[in-house]
Length: 245
Length: 293
Image (cartoon, rainbow over all chains, first blue to last red):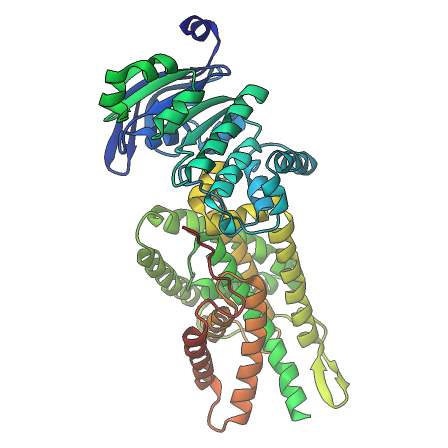
């Protein structure tokens, strides 16, 4: 498994990344790598800096250090340009536009791209076919959807930017186990059918390791352990120490 | 017949209130802030129009220039004065808009002077009579002009990509950043649009017999705030309906209640504001925010 990882071209490379959130320094030199078409999971306890890392990669918090996406240095770029490059965040707690309709939410996903009106409509139709529940509710306000439906909407909205890689922040947060399972099924499908790369931040280690190729464990703003997802899952001492199951 | 006459006059005034109310709503929707200086910005725009026409430029052309300059000025003020305080408590920003109110008023006093000056009319003199009700071309023109502006603005918000972006920023700034909307830029443009709308409102007011002077918009601001309270702070349609209602209510109250005239008419808006806040705080057209935990 490591051999395929090493030979695959790098899509995202993070080198000695520091970030602050408000007055607090949260990341103290994180380095990691996601290969083209790979699913990587980032595990760690609450407050370890996982969400901040994803926000830093998306240009949403002050950061310093090296971030390369698809060969380009994006460490100083604003969020709009990073979205245009195809690196799109699905935020924690969904972060949908509660007062706007489902269809408007989807259209906003393509906001910073150069897509024309008809291209946006075509993408939006495609996503409503992929998630039929969004199609049924296209004129409803997003705030009225259930948690699972909002998570689907948040993923659908991210897909509107025609991304090459999604950053998913706690996609299972606050969802019932059955719903969480279907969210991960969706992610697996996106990965397998579209070759989308995924960097998933999760507290649900078991489910996320199940679909991941590679895993990093972050603690107190630093990467402590990394390795193929299977070897992390099979290492009982590691699981106990960092993942708590 | 008197009632019909008062109704017509009230609608004319109401159109002005609606126009400034709309500026307040646009500013609120793009930045979540009530700009108490919105009326004074409109006064400065009217003053600029007066100065331009006095130098020989036709009044419509002067208004066009004033609209553009007001847009740039509003955006610039947001960038220089309001933007640095965006992360501070809301109250700080509201105090800043009150400071801007005082500043804008002082600038008007110093640069333009306190002497009222008439502005060339936008519309032809005279009017017509319909079953005994006098309707001036000024009034027709003012109402049509506001209707045109409001229609254009509504189409902008509901049909264009930028309009959708504005609605997104108004309700969910954090999510807007995630999808890659430049929130700060939207705030700037929102203040610009609001100031441009104010310019139309201020110049329109001079067509209903008001002279250009530093405090010309003060009563208008009070009635427009009442209009926005009626309509809901984030509803464009509410601002228009609220504006017309306030124009009619004011006209009736000042004509029919003995002793209630001039500035005392502003009492009417106070009564309306208190009544609405007690009964329906989100306004008649305002929507309660959707929140699902």
